[in-house]
Length: 82
Image (cartoon, helix red, strand yellow):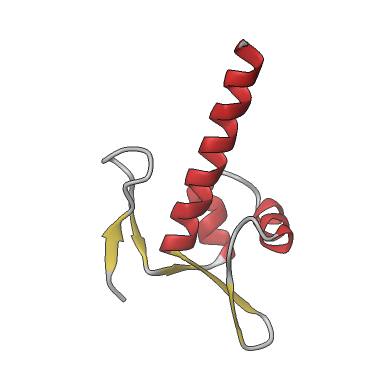
């Protein structure tokens, strides 16, 4: 598996594999695995199901999720400042 740098928030982001499992995703985001599963079920984080039980999150899906969540947070903060 090859790994590349995900440049979502800054250049110091750790190198990630092409696909992450749920615990890796949770660790990267600094959240509990239950939150990752909840975000997948809600459709906010895209995952690929492999077989009956295996879920994988692509680097691109994780990047998109972070961008979406960051944008939503910033818009919420702007709304509070007004």
